[in-house]
Image (cartoon, rainbow, N blue to C red; front, side, top):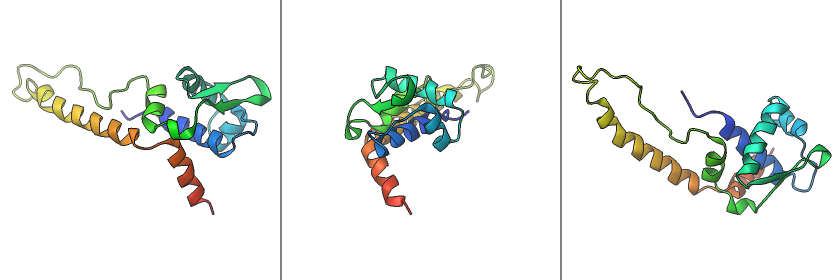
Length: 140
């Protein structure tokens, strides 16, 4: 019951492409950095490609960023790879005969919407260029 790790994998992929721009970026090579199976990398890169964030080619050419990193926000990445974009959802069958069960959805709905909006606002303010720049600052 958490955001799937596809989002962090997608950010990792874009960070690799931005850091090693111009070099061959195969799914096997990226999988070695991420620590996952290359099939997972291919699935996530397919989602990024369909969203217009990267271009891919089979073989040694691998993947390349489709637009400048400063024009790709974390919200763009999130929306590209998360199939369920809602951060929170209600459990399905609260008891309508219970005074809590009958009201819990209406009480939590506003909180869930506000939290979703806050997350999206925050992600929209951070670009992949910033992520890559911060990674370079952290380099030892």
